Amino acid sequence: MNLNEEIRQVLAGLAIPESVNRTIVEAMEQVERNRVAPGLAVGDSAPDFTLPNPHNQPVALRDKLAQGPVVLSFFRGDWCPVCSLQIRALQRALPDIHKAGASLVTVTPQSLTHTLSLQEKAALEFDVLTDLEQSVMRAYRVQFALPEKVKDIYLGVLALDLGKQNADGSWNLPVPGTFIIDRQGIIQTRHVSADFTRRMEPDDVLDALALLSPEAAPRAAAG
Image 1: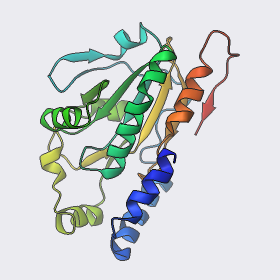
Image 2 (image 1 turned 60 degrees about the vertical axis):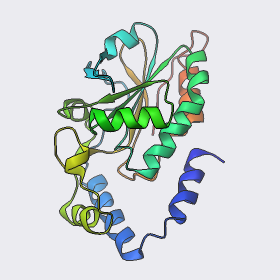
Image 3 (image 1 turned 180 degrees about the horizontal axis):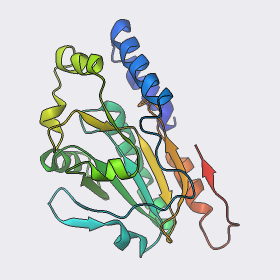
Image 4 (image 1 turned 90 degrees about the vertical axis):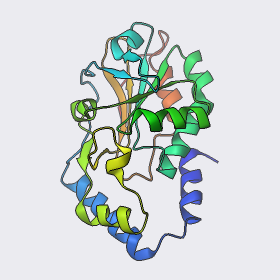
């Protein structure tokens, strides 16, 4: 079972009321149509950043790129079951990511306390960084404000207050985005979608990294 099949299976078991699901889907479709968070494009330079890990230690993208390509993935938070599935799938793929000479960096708006809890519970062995002021989310063009009607669902139906989850106290989130960045800091492959139920498959991440090997012909892909 691949990641997106696993996501569909888990979501089907949540028994979300159809009216609630429809409201969320329509809101995210509007975000997509309006290109509120289109993400940086293939060929763009990846903005450098330094963000804290769960132990409040700074991690810089430029230092990671000095060692090899970087898989950069934005996720919403540990409260999101789809994000949790993706994070665990990436952890399973981590040995192969390392074999490709790359490192994995994930970025979330949630607080350091929540990232520490996630890292410990999921036994994550890669960098989980907190975008304290959401400046990196903005730089990579993946930030959007949760629509009011979806905010009402989170507070009422889901009993979830993102203002208490996010480090900056906002109701802003990243659309799920994964960027494969080469050692020169250029985005070579990307997957960005406002549809939070669709994520880049770990196998696709590994295929993209394989194209960056010295033996592979130069090539860029977009998704």
